[in-house]
Image 1 (cartoon, rainbow, N blue to C red):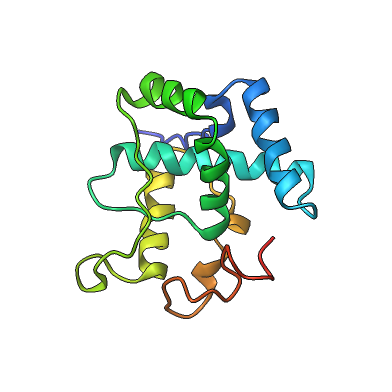
Image 2 (cartoon, rainbow, N blue to C red; image 1 turned 45 degrees about the horizontal axis):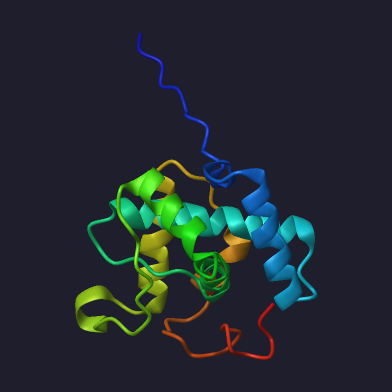
Length: 153
């Protein structure tokens, strides 16, 4: 008889050292004062899981607006970001904002669902609090709680 073992999901926060993680948490808390340290730390993990999934996905992926804010915080630390990409992916992961053709790639909700699936398939933990638009109607950057909305955390 063969027994299937469920593997434990990887906490992506382990992909960077504690000092860099603390810096990113502090940067995000300075930008969003209502963000708790614990939630900011979890957000760093979701951003890192997103980047890990992007490195190996053959299809475009898309961060949630909040995960994108964490990515922006990491990008501001150019050397640390470049070193991270080199160490983990042997290449630089570009940030290319813009809209993808919805006929070819689907809308924002479909892209985010694909992203969550890719993160899960790559073995990383998903924290659905950072992917809230999966519960919303089909949209793409409607700004109803997006990164430039006054309601955005």
